[in-house]
Amino acid sequence: MIKKLISGELDVAICVTEGLVAGISNTKEADIRLFGTYVDSPLPWAASVNTKSPFGSLDDLAFGATFGISREGSGSQVMAKFAASQYEWKEPPKFKILGDVNGLVAGVQSGEVDAFLWE
Image (tube, rainbow, N blue to C red):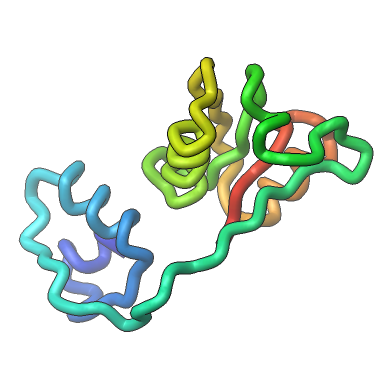
């Protein structure tokens, strides 16, 4: 959406905050500003793994798990980093970009990644 705002295809966009902030900070020519909120409560996030996975909690993912993410700087990546910080993991999470939620589901089903976080 950042590209469409910059190009003038869009006048206004409703975005997930961290994605918008990351897009603004990573785009030098961005003449964009965040001017309000639409939702005042936090989004609940789910940690998803394969049904045959040995992982039963976020703590289980602390030792070298690879997380599927939709894109660099996405909420799925930010929340995995946040979980690592909150749970005081000794190793930082690893990431693999798999695109949209369909790619992330396919990634855990095939074993390409161990888990993904999604709102």
